[in-house]
Image 1 (cartoon, one colour):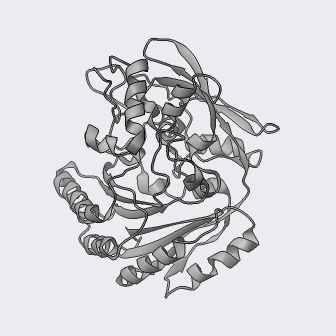
Image 2 (cartoon, one colour; image 1 turned 90 degrees about the vertical axis):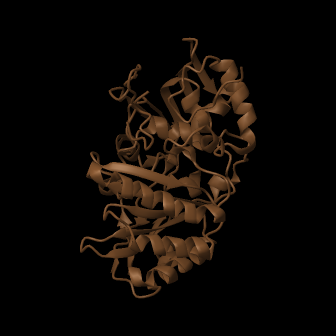
Length: 382
């Protein structure tokens, strides 16, 4: 099933099979009084945000405007709003879904509740969603941008990031990354997004902005749609990508040391090492309340290996794998399913923790022949 086609594992298309291309299904219907929105599966995050922001409303649907809302939501739905309002699945009110038996069902908290539970984090396995209904929240301009530091201070900056991000209010979410700047030099970026009173945000971000000797500071009040498109250029179409990622509740010194060491060896200037961060509302949802399990793990370390020449594929893939191998002993056996490449069922299983057995039982009930298998697959019981 192809919605936005923004899928790191390449599972939005297939060879020798049938692809349902939903990308032209673009209806978005906002109810500003009820603060809800109904959207089709071909809608991209940027399109969704523009329509909801016309009423000063938003809900968590990713961090890159070119991501399709469908695949993003069915795997969880990370967002700049997640610490304030949770994942996309935590704001999902209902879906219309065609299951493997060809029946159109509405799943919600009061209809087909077990299916509704499953699609919130493992939804790619259970059918074709033809409509999503979400709860909306008031969201005005946010305080966002980046503070860049020289790479030579990378260890110090990442340790500061660990301390700063350990205790933040729900309104503030802070990410960090190492990337190549326009001048060809590596830099360390601190990337906050504050959703709330801009004056309060300015005060809260003062320690981050005053830390160290930054080389640039772009933090300012910006439209929410601008924050949502900040990473678009880094994930432009037509490039080759290979990602490795995990989840953790802490950033050990060993993780920071490996990050700095491998950043020095990065084979492509397009590659990024990123620490996404989530807390607050995201972490207050019960681990078994939705199929997404790892609510207690705050950090999402991701190696985004990106390059353009197919001849360079082996060394770029090897670099990502070696960095992740250095991280892995210091990370729990856990992963966000939307970060996964083509890494096999056992790796996909680590996304679901104690929810796995229930998901397999539901997969066996709703899709016993495993019709929907071009995904991070749950194999039905035989």
